[in-house]
Image 1 (cartoon, rainbow, N blue to C red):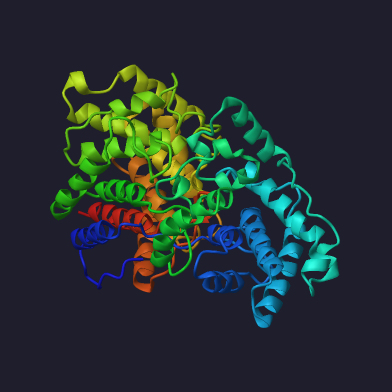
Image 2 (tube, rainbow, N blue to C red):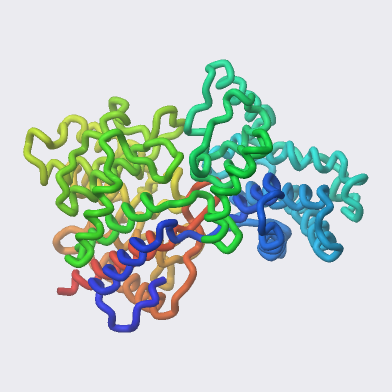
Length: 521
């Protein structure tokens, strides 16, 4: 939450947030247990291992698992932590006290893994179909020699191999690697999760790097382990600055500067960007906008989501850039996030629709949008709505995020054609408010409450119904109280595991609170 003094206005808070984002070349996100554990396992040569091992031990939950969110989300981080603990134990380079703690942690982690529901359902996080079976194979490899190489590990913990959970396939990493070996190249989309296939990629397909591979510390550490010893020094040069920024630990992507700046600017724009922020945000746009498409972080593919947001923010702050970069992602009915995408994203398409609409209103007609394309996109978004009234998406655990994106886009462009979908979303939102005035998929959060507020405001008729007015009043009281109390935002965003982009969340909350204030005027 913002540490702004009581009584600070929205323009002051927004200007301060933009200035803080501008100064931070990495992005405001907390370390990742999954990513840090992968570096522990693959990069014993990287300075600072004692700090990372201490973090791994400190982060274990009372039930033996690791990670954020409910049980299904804990599968991957727990696998990562258990495998890292076993790898360190097999290396034997820790003191007796740390060894005892790691042994106990590994045993409790194995028990927690065996207690997970065998068939999920599992979340649609990045490349889980490769990362989960790869880690299970590595853990089972440790267990096969555990009685000889890891003295003290409880016999029950190593009695049985870990089973592949329902929905995953043991041979997936090798199968995908073989497919691209036959093709002669590994697509860039696999760079971010390279660690999931590293053991199966032939040397001639291992990419060269100029920075973190796929923006990922885990992928970079696995890359170095797959190369000649000389590659270690190259990896150290890229990993050490990240470790310095995160106190010896690692996030799932670094830096997230492009992603963070675009989402912060768009969130604040909903309530009206203060004039003092415009020079900075225009500078961001000039740096980020690319006619070939925008990538969210160095080493990633260009994608429709970041490209759409760059087009949108450019339009909102009056920069003379059009929607042309989106053309490469259009598939005839909607936009693919990237070439070779397996599952579509409603939020990326909602951002694209907003970008097209904003450009059509600000650019000369000959530079504007193709209306039939926007019409098709509107139809596609409506078709993705669940019967309950919400939209799910693969980039966020909460349906409030994706529903807000869809409602905001459809309310701007869809007109009467989308009015029924917007009304269903508003009804679902009003019906799911919690007793304390908040909203949340697992429990009330300020982030999700901000999205719900924006849904109700975007969908509201000129004279809102009394129950909607009451819902907004309760939400406003909840957000005001939370701003005074200050809390850490729970991790709800999807990458390989859950994460929380704090500056982006802060911008969403600031924007929602200001929109609530404005409605009283």
